[in-house]
Each structure stands twice: as C-alpha cells, then as structure tokens.
Amino acid sequence: MSAASGISASEELLKDFSDAVTDRNIRFLKIAIQNEALVPQGSWPSKAEDLASDLSQLDGILVQDVPAYILARLDTGNEWLFISYVPDIAKVRDKMLYASSRSALVKALGGQAVKDTLFATSKKDLSPEAYAAHLRHVAAPKPMSAREAELAEIQAAERQSSTAFEGSRARKNHVGAGVGVVWTAEVEDAVKSLAAGQGANLLIIGIASETEGVKVIETKEVAVDALASALPRAEPSYAFYRWQPEKIVFIYTCPSSSGVKLRMVYSMGVSSVTQTAQETAGFKIFKKLEASDPSDLDLSFAQDEPPASAKPTGPPSFARPRGPPRKR
Image 1 (tube, rainbow, N blue to C red):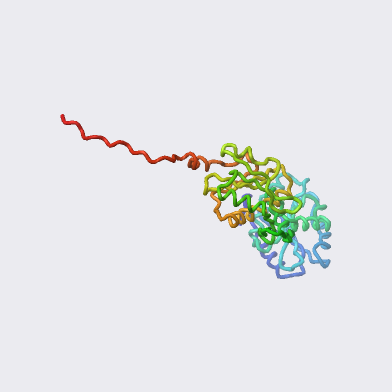
Image 2 (cartoon, helix red, strand yellow):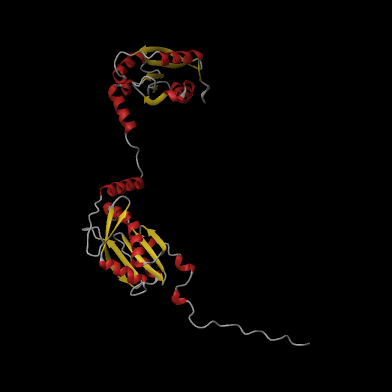
C-alpha cells in the first residue's frame, strides 16, 4: 500500500505491529522511513500505569532533529494513538516525505486500530501536560457559526422559560416545550376586528418585556407600497396586514441591531402568535413574510393580483357582435 510519496509499509512492519497488538505489554512502536519503505525501529514496554506517565520514555526514543512515527497504546488496551513527530529543525525533504506518507501508514495498519492522532514538532509537544491539553481540545465542543450559536441560546431559553401566565381573558399558548404567551382582551379584540374587515388594515403587536405577554403596538391604514415604512425598525415586531378581505398577511421583522434576548423571545413566539391569531379570529393566514429589516420584505404578493378595491364593480360589458358580411 503506497501514498503519493510512493512509500509503502514493509512486511516486517506489518508483522511487528501484529505482534504488538497481541502483546499488551508493549506501549510504543517506533516507525521510520528507510530505503523508500516504512520499517519498524523497535518497541518499548509500559513502565507506568497510564500513557501520560509513560510519555517520558519518548525523550530517549526520539532523536531531536529526525522525524519518526510512534504508535502508542492507549489505556483502553486495544486502541492506538498515532504520533507524527516531525521536528521544525528537520531537513525539508524529510519533513515533506513524512507528511506525505502518514495516511498510507495508517491505512496499512488498518485505520480502525488508530483512534487518535497527535502532531508534534518538538519533544515538548509530547509531555504529559501537552498530551492533557490535546485531550481537552479533542473533547471540547466544535465551534459554532453565529446562527448555530443563536439557535442554541434559543433552545436553552425554551427549556428555562416559565409558563406561569394568567389573566381574566388571557389565552395561554405554548411554543416548543412550554414557552407561555399571554393573549389579552385588547389583542384578541384587535385581531378579530382586523379579520372581520373593521377598522385599520394593519395591526402591529409586540411582546411586553415586563410580562412577555402580547400587546398592541399600533393600528393604522396603510397602502401596500408604504407597508415597509410603517413597521418598527429598532425592535422586533409581529404584524397582521389585511391585504384583501379574506387575505391576511403575517409579517415578522427582527432587526439584527436589537438585543439577543429580545430576538430569542420573538423567534420563539412566532408559531404561537400565528396559531393563536387564526384560532381566535377564525381565519387562515394567506402569506407569511419574514425579514431582519422591514425594507427587506418581499412584497411581490401584491403584484400577483390587484386588491379587491381595484377590481371593477359594475355589470360586465359585452362586445357588440359583428354583422353579416357584405355581398359582393
């Protein structure tokens, strides 16, 4: 088996590794590249109860400026740590050769036997302290993107949120696992009026920070081309827009400049707000729009068909039929 470098594992190495797997007293197996082949350079038994304490042996096994591979038996007994020792002070050709042959060696030994890999550029990288730092790095959670971190915060907030909201005419709903949202009489009446075609065609609601209940922010009559400018820009909000008598659009905007906690609360409340509004007023949302900034809203739905008021209301007109053709 060979790599891009053309180096292959010798039969002698394969045999010595097989013997080392069987002999559980062996802690280290040293491997080098000689004459275009991967060959064994000796094995060493355990002298301590764990690998971390045994690492001090490597100071005498490795040469300061000569690259080598080390197979170190892990404390589990049947798994190995692959150590790639390529000193910074080694010859450039040797460093390139060992770097390009590493994967070939792991495959030749059977990749399943190698559980972990450690890269070292000096003997200091193989101290018990350095190995402990390596283990902490391996065990640490992987870095998350900004979106993944925000979702993780939201999920944590969902688990910790309380559902103890009460009110005389309050309607309690749940998002995920027990996030309560209070619907007061004012909000219920405003949603019902909007759905019934009464009053202004835009209802903007939000979440009160002191109670985390839904409140009415504003109602106004707005043309669709002025919709973006009518919505709050500094804080998140929910809005219901009566585009046509039976076509109500739900709008959720959440500016990135608003606080993280506020964005989490609004993000968790979207499902609850839309579901409760439809159940309360007996309508079905025609369109859902979401954007960070109101100016980013996609209002293309308004171009699909004219609003009801723009449609002709008089009796249909008919074209006058053509008379018979003239005789020649």
